[in-house]
Length: 474
Ligand SMILES: [Zn+2]
Image (cartoon, rainbow, N blue to C red):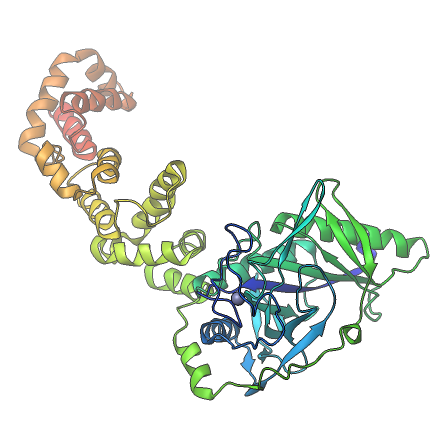
């Protein structure tokens, strides 16, 4: 049924900006912690207090806008959005409405450009904590700075919506704008979704709220696609309303009929002058952007010959991409592919199993670069490399130093290997006979013997070469 309809989705994402203070007062921007410990007369809405905008919040919001390629308006205006809710002590939220901070921009998702409608700043509300005998208000979050990023209705499937969110999170984390942690509430997403028959105008949309993970955004939208298709398919009409995602039952439920903008009685906040962003500030935000994940991925592919899989794995987080480039200075660019493998498999595996942060361990980038370098030079074997890696992880010592001190340097000299091989050949006449009768795979067993005698230090390639030469010479 749903295949007959075109799905149209627009997303509104709120990001809690990573700043020291709240948006309009000096309280710490830390929604966690003991309830009501980061509060003051301003963010609790006491009469007679005045808001003063945080420059840091503006600078982070400008960074977000620049990273999306949005154009910053020379003048934007803070307005009051009036509504009553127990966690909103002033009975209005300071937001931007008619003149937002920035407009336009795009996010590229699987080669398609999703257009951004607007980027604006606003303050967050507090939080209600529901208990058995009533509800409590925690105002630690009240007045913390948010940036809201609204897309055009350019998204056409629930999976594309999830992909957009992942990409947006990646970009915003790269720029240090926000932690973008949906479970902790520093990224929140509301979705508008409608279905329409092919070629006809956009259908009536519903708004879906209360999703707590990317997975639940996707699930909630899939549910809405089926529900709306069922309504339309049976000749009914979709009602414009706000629906809440119920994660336990995996359904959306009606919350309220959708309010219109005029219900909020927006008007410019007389306590805050219009915000003039001079071009120098915008310029500074743009100039201080790091290389963003998508261009960085393409550069890794072009410059180092990495596969798309490796390049996208490395650029997933800025820390990992930075780590790679720093390690590469030591390993040499000719070992880029090998280094990528070590980072994506060994190091990431270890970091995950130990539960440390990506940079919170003793294997600094130069140490891993050095390790990969000496493996590729043949100083040690790949197998030994894994043991050395564990030792570097535990001690933070240089791999080369560990190799020297333990005498575990790989044996690569023919003078050392030849007598060993001769010994093995003499001890295994049966295997030699088989080899000469055409069963060449038996050489593997003899290589194993030499490796055993050297504690795994002999270069296996050279051992094989030597064994074959000696057998043929016989
Ligand atoms: Zn405060």
